[in-house]
Image (cartoon, rainbow, N blue to C red; front, side):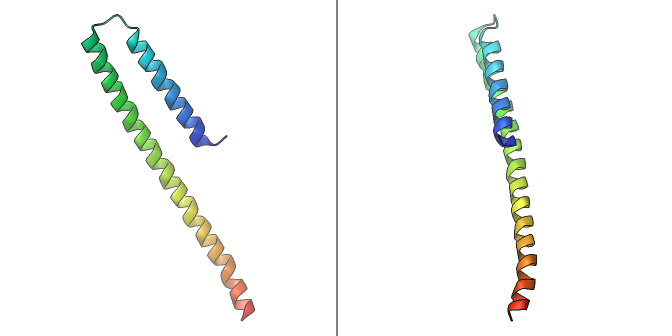
Length: 81
């Protein structure tokens, strides 16, 4: 299983747990809604940050792979000529 899927599962589980905890807390509806919105924004920001890190990591690995292939292809091209 990829680490991205595990991370997404953990974040989704944490978000669901937090929402259920807030919904079952004995507070006024307006206060509960404000807490839900606040937590949702916090989780969205965290998810954006993690996704950005994931994209950066994938981009970096892609660039490394391209460079490795270029280094291996150049000597072969020289042999062919």
